[in-house]
Length: 404
Image 1: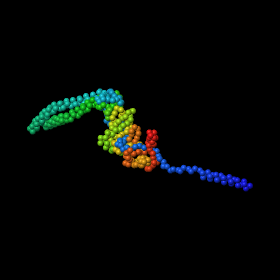
Image 2: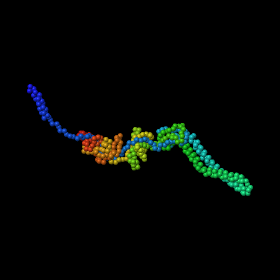
Image 3: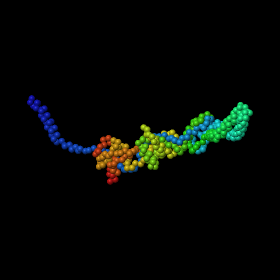
Image 4: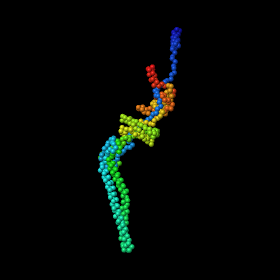
């Protein structure tokens, strides 16, 4: 009975002894070595250069010297020789008004001028006669005065002679006034004649310069009113791109223009490149910015009114580093790689540059050395002293091993 009770205790004791023996004879685990994590990053070699920042501008093709040809007088359009978009040479016929609406005005004005010339000849002939009549009237009054003094004449006859003299004097004064006013009246009538002849010449509307027709607004046979626009045209070599730039760049661009710096904008349009040169900057700004006008180099390549997305060069910036956007951390900080660790440097953002469809940053970094690697991998946890290894160095190591 006692043996049965001791047997389980014996088995338990043997099991404990075996476990202790196994534990005592197990191999020692390797020592844990604490290692710092090294982040693999891409880098770019810093180089201080002179480069032009760029601005993206959105604008519309305009013709500031657009011409609107209008009807000189009320009349009917006899002929239209052009259509929308046609190119015409200087002096080419654009439209013709019906001459039957213009020639009567010229004939009437010429008749009025001729009538005035006839009138002055008549007045000059008549005034001599009226002076003779005045002399006779004065002699008649003198005779009646003698008779009145001799008490031989009637007073009514004397009054009648005086009245006749007054009428002759009035007629003579009016004639002299008409002769004096003749130059003014003639000049007025000649001006009306010149105006009518001018309108008659304008009845044939011709292109003042080599131009492109913008829009024809009437058709042959239409009745038009004075001043009504018949068509519009613009010089084929005077197209401009009007766009807006932020107001903070206006003074910079104006200074560059005054210094003679040619600032060029380039845009993709119609499968080709459209170039324009900055020529004028507006003097007023609003919430959207300041207007700028850029003369288009090849006006034939773009129609007026087209909307264009262009890239405008800014003045040359000296001592800048060209970096990808991913190199910028926090908006004003980059990280150089020195002895395998990150070193944070304050950076001033000068602008952007677009090349081959890629947007790059132009930065001024006072503490950066030429040729020093700069991290271009954007690490959210980047801090000073973080251990890193350049992917470019890892890629070059196997190549060296193969060469060896």
